[in-house]
Image 1 (cartoon, rainbow over the protein chains, first blue to last red):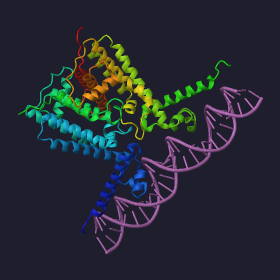
Image 2 (cartoon, each protein chain N blue to C red):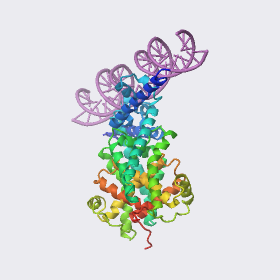
Image 3 (cartoon, rainbow over the protein chains, first blue to last red):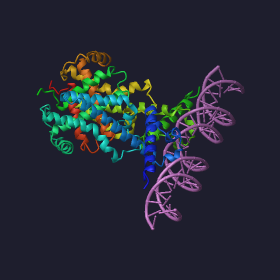
Image 4 (cartoon, helix red, strand yellow):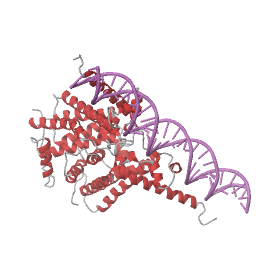
Length: 234
Length: 234
DNA sequence: ACACATTCGAGAGCACTGCTCTTGCTTTGG
DNA sequence: CCAAAGCAAGAGCAGTGCTCTCGAATGTGT
């Protein structure tokens, strides 16, 4: 067999696929998802538009690939922030990860809109995206779990009867070692955190909040207390 | 002068404009903002596409009109829920309005996406939308204000120095009669509330939260406590 | 090593979009 | 009553996603 047995084609395919995604990401960052055009991508890459369909069977498939990459990029940022704050207390770790999420969103507004804004209408994300989409959430679960092991987690008020079954179901799925009330509070805070980021990013804070960084820091600190995180010394 | 002096044309214009918006709203609800097509609207109305430009100079202008209508529709729902719960305590009023927002969102997902999801890329809402967009927020401010007058509002923990100027600025703009710490908490909870709604609507709760109604109810109750609302008996 | 099968790039073409411009007809106001 | 403004219609431009066909390059089984 030759030195690159089946490689010469497979490798070229990899490279072209990557080039397409890179150029698409460029257009996405520059103009937003709606103005991402397969023809423009192909044009920029010096190929004809129909050739591009050998790599992505449709525009939606290209978008899906970009969505997965965006989730991974955000997840990496969150994980990196978590690792960097490994020596700090639970509240500080929580805050650090939250700020990493916000920073990433401000740095990649169109990609954030792609994954957390309204999904491109008529399009529903396939299951392929689930693992990448879960990464940020897992970081927050990790913070709670660590805090729970070092008395840095105060169990919140007992759950009302109406929510107990749901909370126990979530707990079994997400973190069986944590109290259901904490898991329920975490999931709520998780959604609320992205509410804060989204409102800032999508202009809802215009004419309302000026010092967004300070406001976000404070709100995120309240969320940490809300899930029961405390900076115990020991 | 005739019975409808300048009315015959002006009135026809009104009617056609309304018909266009109605048909556009239909398409918006059916297919989403991205698939809203001026040509399709015109086709459905039995006119040619170029005629439609006499009423809306561009597709974005049509969308803006729909956005304003959506804000008003949501605002009306919130105001109605508030009025209906006028006799209840502050926490119940808060919860009623929050549930009205969620119900409206579930009933009009594409319109919700239009106003609270990622803005249609390349498009920034003009100032015309501000009054309609403010209505929901004003309802929540009203609840706080009423509660403040009837000892139904507990002032939250004092603000950190870093947020005090911003909180005082917001207070002066939004509700000078309320404590800055309460106003800051309200704005945060406002964003967080829409985070909860958005996560449910845009599929982020798939595979995570099952009983969304119960979960939302509980989370919204916590938000009410977070802003300091209590159901005092007096 | 040869023949068969698969993969790929290119081009033409279809149906659709937002938007502009011109051509006439109708309503309006002086 | 007549000029001015408002209006619907049609043709047309540039762009889009996507499909199909056709050679050429690149694989694979015998």
